[in-house]
Image (tube, rainbow, N blue to C red):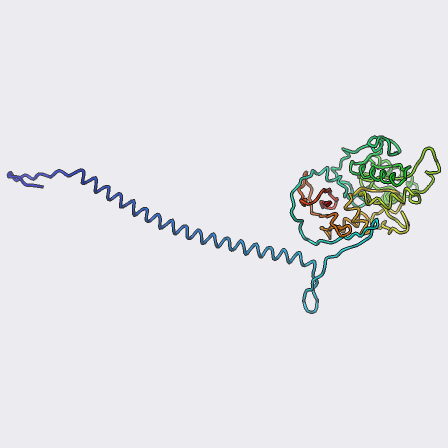
Length: 396
């Protein structure tokens, strides 16, 4: 400021340019300081993030290694025994079974709990899987409540009446029909004919009628629960008959031009012997072996099947399962029990992998996802009516 002669004080005007410069410098300083603080904070955060990420990765790696170690220990535990005195474990090879079928060596190997390799996932609906071939139905395991006979074919119509049947109501599911048709064609190639399918699928109404008729015959001797139990000895209770699966068929021989053909006992005829001996090749089993039936070479399985009557009944299960049952000499009940305790098996024909079977737990659902090894050339999947889904893979 300045003082004039009159002693008045006058304020000097500020320079706006210099003021602008000063404000700009201050703002620039603030920006620089803020940027420095930001960079320092960011560097600190990045360092902390990397440290925490490295720790998480380390923990994940350690957890994965620990999990794999436990799984390997679990898988290997089937292959070891523990000495009760010393506590030492010794390694054991997984079990295997061998047999000669059709002049070729077969070997069935237990794969323990080893998982399938190189797989893709497939989806199957419940109705299809119920009819896949492995459904166990017997006096202790009834048909599923949602079982349906939709999709069955008339054996006579489907074959153009080339396969003899009692009438046009002899029906099977397609997979069972295909196996039956292939068997009869195979027998014809070997010079055998005159087969007839006496009976196949029974509806629940038919089974109920048969059961009630038998119960009526016995009602003069028994009553109440005793009457029902006595009836069950000759006719299965509705819902528990093998005939109701749509996968089984009763065979016989017949020639309208030669009545003598039909007088032979099926299992004593050349046709019957061929059928029983070769059925496994077509995915078919003889369902109810009993004492000396179909031949004395077969073990009586009536204590497992609940059926002691001599019935020429055959059942479609699929080639892999029929082969396994032939190697093991098992009926269907024994085989399902076997798969529950041996859920993964491989079948080798003359040293080459031919079939692989894998069973997994399966709760009731509308659809199911299941693994299929990519090298497999084909597969069939089926619910077993014992809480499991069974897959059979074929390899060329």
